[in-house]
Length: 79
Image (cartoon, rainbow, N blue to C red; front, top):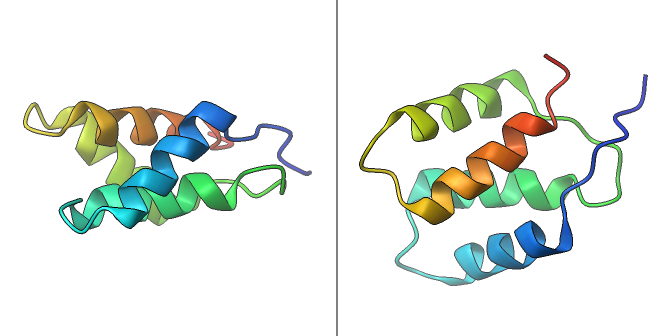
């Protein structure tokens, strides 16, 4: 079954900015890469990225940008 969910252009733009920002956290960059890999490609979120995204959403210290990416990544999971 192919994943029919895709990363929006707004989230893709945010992800690109995160990847180009040397101050972005490792987790934010991982989420950004995952989100970008799901732009019009039918890819789905891996179990590893699901765990990272869940941790980001559960952490009150995570940035709003990281949470935005985490939400997008989790929304493209088949779970």
